[in-house]
Structure formats: C-alpha cells, structure tokens
Figure 1 (cartoon, rainbow, N blue to C red):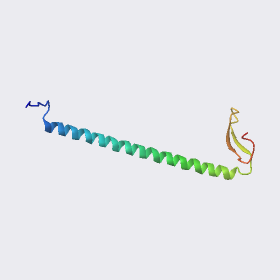
Figure 2 (cartoon, helix red, strand yellow):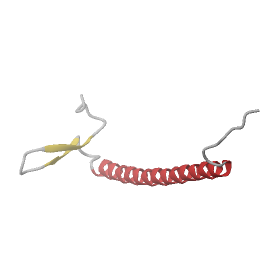
Figure 3 (cartoon, helix red, strand yellow):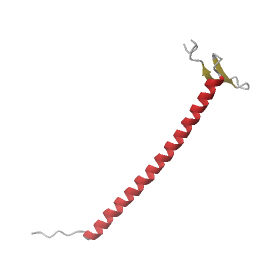
Figure 4 (cartoon, rainbow, N blue to C red):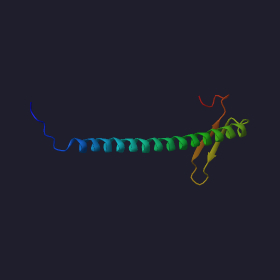
Length: 89
C-alpha cells in the first residue's frame, strides 16, 4: 500500500477548514445585517411616501390637477392628477 504524504498535517488542514467556514459564517451574518438595515430604510421611505400620497389626495380632492411650479425657471412638476378626469389621456 502506498503511503500518502500531506503537505500540511491533517490537524492543520482541519483547523484551516474550520477557520474558512467561520469566516464564511461571519461574512454571511454581516451581509444579513446589511440587507436587514437596507430593508428597514426602504420600508421607512415607503411609509413616508404613502403618508405624503394620502395627504396629497386629501388636500387635492377638489382639483383636477395640482402642479409645483418653479417661478424662477418656469419648470413645473405634476404633483397630483385627479383619477376621475380625462387629463391623463
């Protein structure tokens, strides 16, 4: 039977494998925390936008369309268009 010679002792290979697995687990945990934080930020942003939309719908209920006009440049932005109109067409 042939004798197998290892470059590193088996015990050292086991330690290296465990260290590698530990590093992978730590990286996975860091990634999980980062994704969780990003999701919380996105959820917060969505809630803010929904609150703004709700407020805009309540304020602008009597108007066909509401615009934000920058008087210095003449540019404008549509803030709200009433759903019951044909303005969108």
